[in-house]
Length: 174
Image 1 (tube, rainbow, N blue to C red):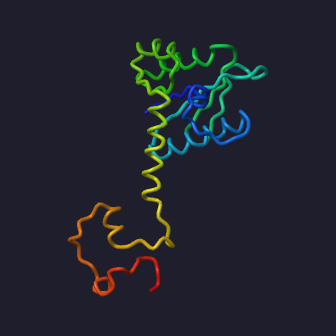
Image 2: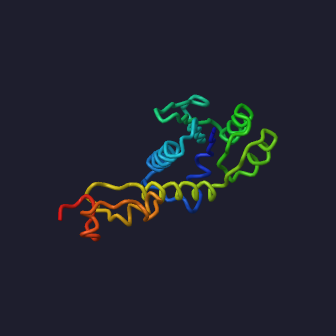
Image 3: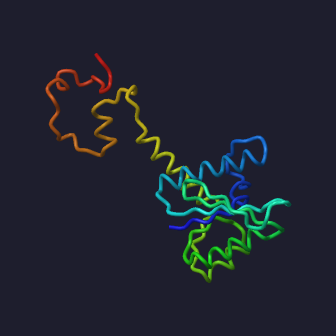
């Protein structure tokens, strides 16, 4: 799957909760969160497109190790045009934007549009799944909790030691 994100459109969406005091820190936070999502969802390629700043060559690319390409497009409307041209190149890509011009012009390339709200829902859902399975040794998980986590029936053979003390927690010495 190819995911193309209108960077500032997502970052300045009212429900986006960023970490950072300035634009650079906020952009870095967005990149970090998207990279985590990409890794969790096993997305083959993510392209983040931001409007660039003067002094940076057009469409400067920065490739990160997470199979993510970051493009800074120079000039007003250049990010929109770059996203549209990318949707042509990657026919059928998923595009995160609320920009009407981008939505309208990428339809002919069979782009699947996700609004920033829809994408945030996906991000939050993946974090809940990650937390559900993020267990450490010192948490002391009960057998019932393990059964629920791994969606197992209670009809499994329980060792005798556990039958004697059903409240005993795994990972703790009692």
